[in-house]
Length: 85
Image 1 (tube, rainbow, N blue to C red):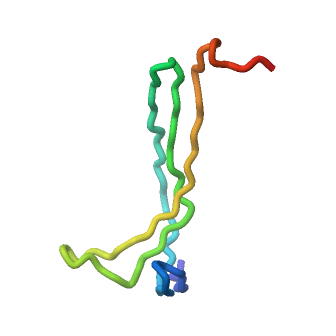
Image 2: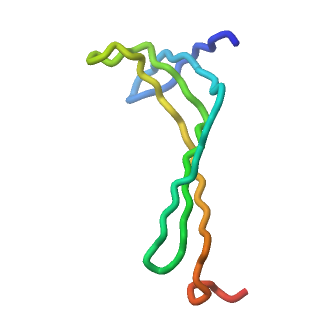
C-alpha cells in the first residue's frame, strides 16, 4: 500500500505526516474490580496512526501519533446498585 502524506494541525501549526495503516491489532481488555463489587473492562481501540517527519534525538526512532477511542464495559454490577426499570 502506498504511503499517504498529509498535513495536520499540531501544537498551533501544520505538520506534515505520513499515514501508516495498521496491519494487525491485538487489543486486550484491562479489567478492574471495584470496591462496590462492579467490574469494569476497558480498552483503547486505535483509529489512526501517523508518523511525523521527526525523530527521537535519543535513539533516532521516528515519532508516531496514535489516535484511539476508549471502549468501556461495566459487568457484574451488584443488584443493590442497579436502577429498577
